[in-house]
Amino acid sequence: MNKPKSSPKRLDFKTFEDKVDKEGVVWEEKEEFEKAIIAYDKLLTEVKSLSSSGPRENREKDAMIAYVLMRKAGVLLQTGKGVLGEQLMQDALLHAEKSRNSLIIARAKLGIGVFYGSGDRFEDAEKLMKEALTSFGEGKNYDDKQGQGWTLLNLGGLYRKQGKLIQAEQNLTKAIEILKRIENWVGVASAYEMIAKVQTGKGNKELAKKDLLAAISFYEKQGMTGKADLLKRGAERNTALHQHLKEMKSGKTDTQVPEKLVKGVVEFHGHLGPFLILGLKAGLLANSLLGKDCFKTRTVVTTNPSPPDSCFIDGIQFVTGCTMGKGNIELRKGKGVSVRFSKEGTTLTLKLRKETLDYVRSILSEEAAKEASLNLLSRPTHELFDMEK
View 1: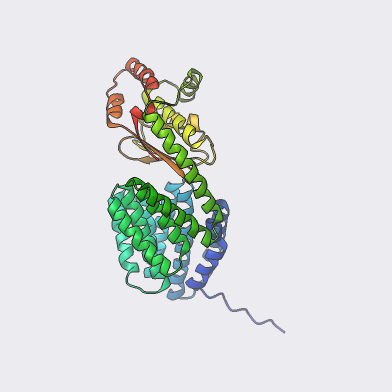
View 2: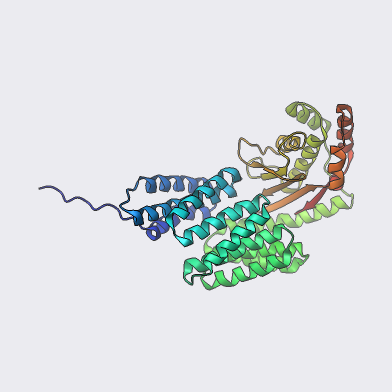
């Protein structure tokens, strides 16, 4: 007797979304990002191998592919691989548009907006996020409410990055209200974590502390104890970091550059130059304040990606151990010279002061460059950079 043929697996986005959450998102919440990537690659291979019968199933398949690509892209952004992540997010939008699923299209627009915001393309980021918010706002179910909350959260983060702290606080407060109603605790925790940074920027230390404690509480409620512990340790380091920065600015302490280290970075880079020395001093400060760890530290440098400005990167790579090969240093094209170091929930941002940048860019000869380098070595770091923790 012949066995009856098994019916082909029906393509259904909602069922697949649940599968992705159980097999991939669970690793994101535990911050086991390599396992998340493996899970998403497996799921992507699986969904691409499924056969579809007719236009409706073709659209479901595109929605499924878009969702996995979005999840993987988000992990790549968190692990410092923003360029590759943005490419995947753009691919996700293409599949989302083919799916004609308004929810997936809105999520993809939000995702690209997040990438634009991380690369300081603020106007484009805000435009896409607002388009996503409009789409999410047309529905009243859980998915739409979740989309509204997370879009407001990311808009809050975008405004904070631009120094628009009132707008940031307004959006984050709305995000918390919406996400609490649907019991999306990881979203609530993320919003409280961001609003704590806003309060810090406004000089409201007590409110910042209160919001950070709320973030820790909601991460624990979600079961993300690793993230909660990370914030607790970060809060302790931030206290020490604030004190250290205060002492530096008062002239009580500064990072000294040993002669042996200068010789080493020159051998590594090939010649002595002012941007190289500035990168070295920035990296030394990060090591001093965050603790040197060439694997746990992540670095994002924003500058002109061509010499002499890009020589700044070699100074950082040499002294911190963050390298392009390991993927924990990222170069973004932008004006001026700035760097953001982050380690286990603590962040240090350094931006080269305009007068410093004008000084090094006025140098026209190799001899003058050497003289300027030695001058920069002897100057306190806080005179060269604006600092933000």
